[in-house]
Figure 1: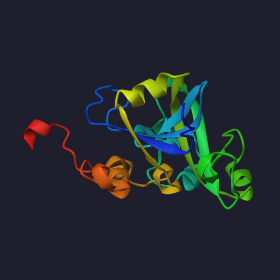
Figure 2: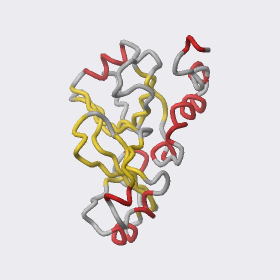
Figure 3: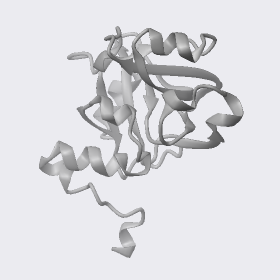
Figure 4: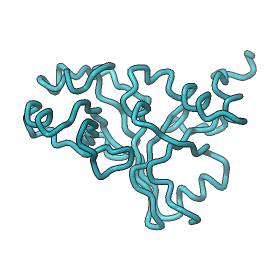
Length: 179
């Protein structure tokens, strides 16, 4: 491996026909020779926040939903927070304990959270193999990608912002034969 991709985005290429990652933007939170761990940022679930986590709505923002973080352990939750206090994760993010009271989390400098069910994971060398096969584009990330209020537009937004050849794919149709 030439270098860690921690803190970067994996953008699924149109020819990646894996239903787990088709049309996704994945933030890599860890990446080493042992493997990689990330969260899909643009798949809100139909599970409203108010049903599951009363009191967290103000911190979650819009859309007020739990997100599908990836195909691994979908019954487990990962919560990312961002605010005045810089966290140890890429982009200044921090993990947040949902057992804590929302007021305590706000008092700790966290202004926004996003809740993910499941995660994306790769064993040692697996992601590198997928990159070599051309399954992903790798691009820079920003906090707005994690906390976007328009996750349905994130794939196009990231590609457009990345410029160069990637910009051409920003409005790639779901079915190119209809273009």
